[in-house]
Amino acid sequence: MDAAARAFARTGFAGTGLDEIAAEAGVTKVILYRHFDSKADLYRAVFDRIYSQITGLLGTGGYDHNVVATLLHAATLDPDGFRLLFRHAARELEFRDLVDGLTAASATIARRELASRIQEGPWLDWAVQLLPVLTIEAVLAWLDVGQPDPAEAADRIGRMIRHTLAAAEAGTDSIRPVKSEAR
Image (cartoon, rainbow, N blue to C red):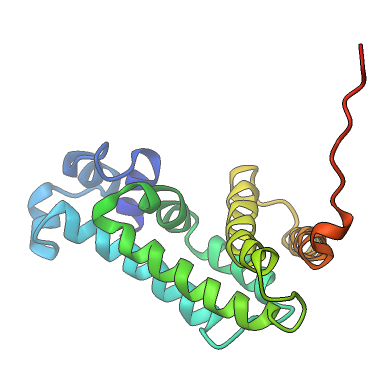
């Protein structure tokens, strides 16, 4: 599973062959076929594993102040699986349901958490869509640059989230058009 996650994370489903996965794992394709009926079954198994890890760590009830640190921890447990789920699955129509499920659950929880802070309307809708994406992209970038100081990363991502929330809470009152200088 780890070898499959590494291989798929490099080039996605379409760009990865079973020969590459077998070589990464140090086994033959015959061994892969003993455990999985197809490449698609193996791909889904890798997704299911990281999906279960993430939902097991985060839960589905709500978010608290530890959510970013927990998400960073989930990413460190299986960096390739995390990348595969959030970077490649969104582009793989056959497997999009897994990402859509996480996105829908995140949006539901975000709406429930933000409804008391942001008035119903487009700014709440904006924040509900943006915050999960912003958080996931921040974790992916953190993985890509070598996972510097997880505690500091959680704090920095948390500050980014708080600033985004402040922008959503302010609504249109604080947004001013940018004036271009006349030349």
